[in-house]
Structure formats: C-alpha cells, structure tokens
Image 1 (cartoon, rainbow, N blue to C red):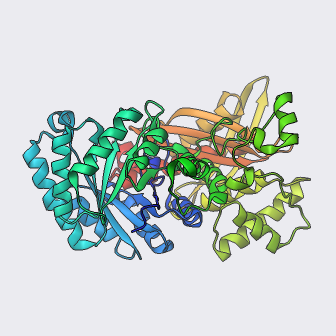
Image 2 (image 1 turned 30 degrees about the vertical axis):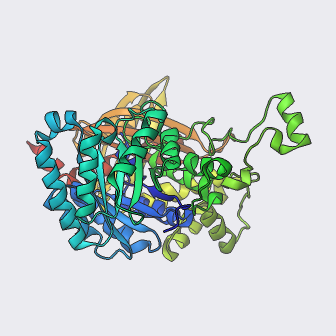
Image 3 (image 1 turned 90 degrees about the horizontal axis):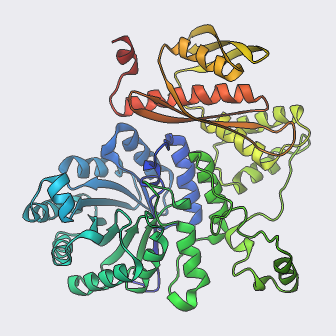
Length: 517
C-alpha cells in the first residue's frame, strides 16, 4: 500500500445532495458521476440506497455507468440498510459498503437510545454482515470528534476484527479545531492498531469554516483518505471542499509530502457542472474555482503579474482548468465542434441526446447572433437533462397580457395524452402565469425562492430561472431557460412541480390522493 497516496472519496452525490434545496434526478447524478470519473477520484459515494427507491435506483445506475472508481453506498448499522446497499451495488465493478453508527454520548443518549455495549454489538454484527456481501467495507463512527477516545478506539478495533478495511473519523458537526483534531487522529490511529492494510479516513464538516484545514491536519497525522465534496456543498455549512484539499496538497507538496491521483485540470469544469446542476452558485471569491480566483485588478498586482506571474499566483489557471478564452460557436459550426465543446464542458451525452442538443443549438443560432458557452450549457441542462420519463406535466403553450402592471396569463399543459388549460390574473406576467399553473395542477404550492439570471450581458441573452417550491413539507428546485424570461420562469415552475411528484413518489407519498383528501 502506497503511504504517499491520499485517496479522494467524493460524497457530492450523497452528503452534497443532502444540502437543503438540492434534488438531482438520476440523469443529472450520472452526469456528475461520469465527470468525477474523468476527474479521477478514487471513490464515489453514489447515495444512500435505503433512504428511498429513487436513491436505490440512482446508486444502481451509477454503478453500471462508471467502472474505474470504487462505488460506495451508505448504510446505517442495520440489516435493511446493509442489504439495500448490497443490492444497489450488485453490478458495480468495485463495490464498497459504507456503514456507520453514532458513537458520542450525546447521540447515544438522545438519538439512538442505546448503551455503549449495544452500539459495540451493532458494529460487530453489521460490519460482519457487510463484509459477507462485499470485500471492501468502510466503517464510520458518526460524531467521532465528540466521542470519548477510549470508546472510539474500542469501536474501531471491533470494526477491524469484523472485517472493515477503511475506518473513518468524522467531524460530523464541524466542532473540532485543527490542533485538537490532529492530536485525536494521531492518538486513535496509534492506539487502534490494525496494521498497514487499514486505510484511515476523515470526513470533516465546515460549521466553523475549518473542514479543509482539519482534513489537511489529519493527513499530516496518518490519514490516507479524505471525504469531501465538489465546491464543499453538503449538510448545513457543507463539507471539506475537494478542490481546496487537492490543490492544498499539490501546491504545498513540500509540506505534506503526499500525492493524489486527481486530474486537476478537470477541477474547474467539475465545479461548474455541479454548480449548474445543483443550482448552488460558486462565489466569485471561492478558492481555486471562483471567477475571481485568478483575477487581478489592483495596479501593483497587475504590474507584478506582468513581470512574473508567480509574484501573485501560487497556481496557474491551467493547473485547475480555469478558462482563459472562450470558444464561441455559431450557425456555421459543425456537429464535431459542437460535440467537442459539450464534452470539454464536462457533459457526457448519448448519441441521441447529442443529436437532439445539436438540433436545439442550431435553432438557437437562428434566434441569436452569438451563442455562448453559457447558452449551450443552459440548453443542455434545461432541454436535455431535465427531460426525464418521470415528467408529469409538459408545457404546451402560454400567452400573457400586461397593462400597467396588471397581468393575465393563459397556460396549457400536457399531462399524458390530456391537454389542460386555464387562466389567471396576477401582479405581473410571472405571478399570473404561476397562478394559472396552480389552478391547473389544483395544488397550493408555495414559492420559496425565485431568481432569474442572464447567461451573458447581451440583450438577447438566455434567461435562466431558478425557483424552489414547497408542498406538504417537500421542497423541490426547478429551473428553466429561454430568451424570454417569462417562458423561462414558467418552465422552472413546471420543472419544480414535476420534481415534487418525483420526491413524493420516492418517499411513498401520493400527492394526487393527498390532494383529493
């Protein structure tokens, strides 16, 4: 086992997707998984199979779609969870079951209602069961950073004896501080033993903004796997940011003395892909992948850059794949150039999807003088990836009329073979259109958030609408794009409604029955 190799465990599709207001469909998850494979992550945590049928199917689909990384499914220490993970990973080329249980006294007392002895027995039973299904088993002690160290060592020793091959030390609530966490990691590894065949891992959360530094300190003290997410997305304040951990190790290899196998030139495109599909924007000042990460405005900085780039840049934009120029495609561009552009952006489309995307691109060229990279990306997300067999409603037609702020809207939606139309008034065309849609679906969906962005600074830019809807405790995101912002907003609302039905189905809720009652 190479002790200089740090394995990158990406949990964007599991912990990252657990962030509030993120819900990806299977097609979107597969796009991200394929890009993670291109990024050369070592392990992809594809989901939590026991959480829902949707998660089960997504993990199974990802297992079949990508072959190089280890694919893992999360499972609590329970028979149902472990069996569900095994079932989801049945076709994976390199399957791993990642099982966990909380170990801190506050979790045992207030959440699990279990004694330490019961937790220890649960670890022994279900890690052994997971090992009977797959050879690669990871065990995590949830809330390890607030766990009594003697009990933590005992738990890890039991996990090793039961067949675990990777042991994870999570800072589940982002409570640890670097020096303290480093000491704890060093002490746990030393006292647990297990030999050189055991891989030690950390999973740090960012509640105090310390996830990356805690992860790096853990590496300095013997950890050889880091669990992280693209752009640091995840529960609450998120997880350790993959791109920051990787570039920290690479840029300061003199300090850390370890390597990853990450293809760093894919970091920017992976970050951008995840941002677009989740709807979570990357702040301009975000380290490594933010739009300002390699921007220099101050005169003294610009002068230094002209003399020697290393005066103010410790990394080159090319190191992370940040763009320096933008290839603009137009109506004379061919299918080959279009396909190459799409793949450079990180999207992997089937032959039929690529053909449809190219056709839509040509239609857009007839409406716009210049089609930008952003235009193409929005087209793919809104018209290709958002089109899933699970769609309940499809926009057929709409019209709006506005007079001094008072507006009316007529909407026609297709539901299967049925066309349903209705009209409503509102305070502006978008408000009126949303009221008409609510009348058609006969559900009191609540608009949680609404945002419209332009793909470029030109007057004919594609507008991209992002909204969030809430119904019966379910919250779904929707997005839509068009050169007409009203149409983009309508598409976003319909997309969010369809995702509500998908979320409800995954949780065993029948919204039609609930509506009737």
